[in-house]
Length: 394
Image 1 (cartoon, rainbow, N blue to C red):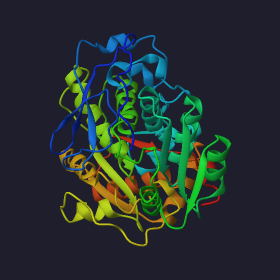
Image 2 (cartoon, rainbow, N blue to C red; image 1 turned 180 degrees about the vertical axis):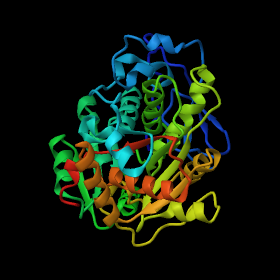
Image 3 (cartoon, rainbow, N blue to C red; image 1 turned 30 degrees about the vertical axis):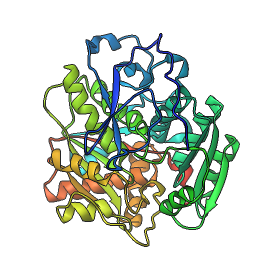
């Protein structure tokens, strides 16, 4: 078992991080101790902040990375920050695509420009920085690809031993990435759920950074919403369309909008959140269609979009809560449609998006056709990764 860490020195802290709290039963936990999930109900822990004066004008002149929002991030001592240049990715107007689909205001948040080529760098930057601060020596992760590479990179920076459990059928680029960062790569027959089970079957003194089984990855992902609002001159989009596997980014962004209102940066307005899943791995879509607040395990899941191949999200209730609370929706897209979306984005905008990103354009087309999205809505598509890493899949 992992031992409780000594309370870190906080002399250089500017963080408003106050405590951890269970997302369901509200049980509080100390920010100075190592925690995974709630000891009472087993659900995800989230970070609470004691919000103090933090005017948005104070961001002027700060470095263009996610750490510009340090006060609302949970690393207490700045010496433990692991910065590889993550965050503040461009929010690109894509007028050619807008004209193609018949919408006035369309933007792509291009997360492919993060370290290791995907948005996973955001979450793992925070998770491993906190592991570093809490003096954790070994970290482990189950991954469909990108998260493993991101964890390996930040562990390399921190000098933490990294263990990555990955499906054996994963394209070689993701395996080699982990190995070149010095991680121990464990290949598992099956999908990411089988990788997660393989980790629990091993009695090892390591810290598990599985999606929402630790409190900090969501804090990195939430910065996408901070950036979108800042890049839109403190306006909130009408719709955010997001590819959903484990759902950390969707949960994080929804959390961020509430935090920004508490900071006084925005008002009560919120975007409608759209969760996009693969046709052959659609547990959230099925649950939403049935009006439920949790999902069933999706058997025989498969898709070219590695990040969407999550048969059951650990915090599915939080994903569905964000969709319901935002008056959003969930939609499934086939692999064939994803490839069509990749080609359309590439041919019209010169961007090579991941299959997850390709799915978003098709989802937008369908939601426009149904009338769920209107021509005048301001829509943001969150492309979560680089198409270059998916050439073998496609």
